[in-house]
Image 1 (spheres, rainbow, N blue to C red):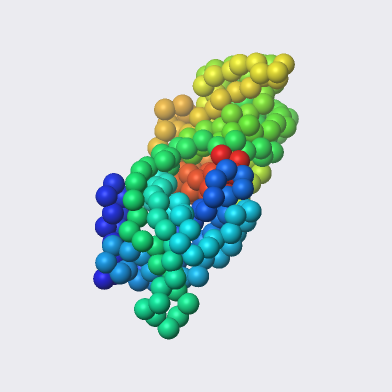
Image 2: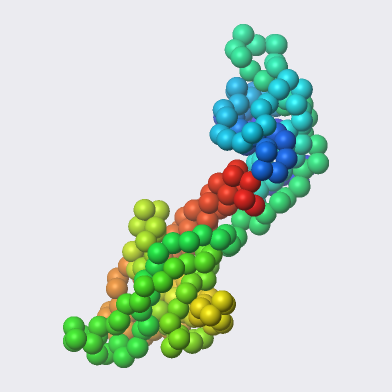
Amino acid sequence: MVELTLPRLTQPLILWEKLELIVGEGTQAGHYTTRIEDFSGRAIVISPPEFIGGHTLLSDRAEVMILITRDDAIYQCYSRITRYPASEKKLFLLVPPQGIKRVQRRQFVRVEVFERIEYARIINLPEWENRENLPKWYQSLTSDISGSGVLMSADEDTKPGDLLLLKIGVFPEQNLPEIMAAVCRRVFTQDDQVMAGVEFLTVDRLTRHFSIDDLKRLPRSIQDFDRGSQNRLVNYVFQRQIELRQKGLL
C-alpha cells in the first residue's frame, strides 16, 4: 500500500510525506515532525518523531494532532501514537486519524510579518529618461503580507489608485523580483500612522495600468512577477504561518 485516502483530504497521503505532530495544547504544546514509512490498514507507520520545540513531550499512546500540508490548505486530524512492534526499525504507529478538517485557506493567506520595504510612486514616466527626475524612494515597514498584497506604513501623500514600485527586502532571498509594481487600494490611519493596503500587479495585469512605452521605462523585474512567482510568495507566507503556529503565536 503506497498511499492512503482520507475523507476531506484533497490528495491521499503517500510514502515519505512529511507530517507535523502536536501534543498538548496552547503555548505548552510540543511540536514534532515525522515522515510516513508505511501504511498498516488505515493506520500510518511513521519514523521516530523529531522534536522541534515546545514543552509537552510525546509518550506512548499519547493523543496527537496531525497537521497535513496541501496546495489548497492545512488539514488537521487527531490520532494516538504507539510503538510499532511489527518492524525491526524503531518505528511508530498513528492509529487511523479521525476528525479531519480544513483549518486554513492557503491561497493568499495573510500573516502578520514585519519586513523592511521601500516604495516609490509612479508619476511622470516620460520624464524618467532624465536621471534628475527619477522617482523618490521612501523607507517603510510592512505590517502584514499575502500572496496578493501587503499592508505597509506610508507617507501622507499616498492615496488609493496610486501606482507604486516596491522593494521588499526579503523577496530576493525567496527568488522573487527585487522590484515589483503595485496599486494602492486603501489608505487609513492607525495609531497616528498612515497605512496603505497595496495590491501586487502580476505581469498579465501590467498593461491594464501601463502602456508599452511606459513599461520600457520601468524596471524590467516588474515583469518577472508571474503566477509562478506569486505561488512562491504564497508558499513563503504559508511557511511563515506554520512557523508562528509552531511557536504558539497563532
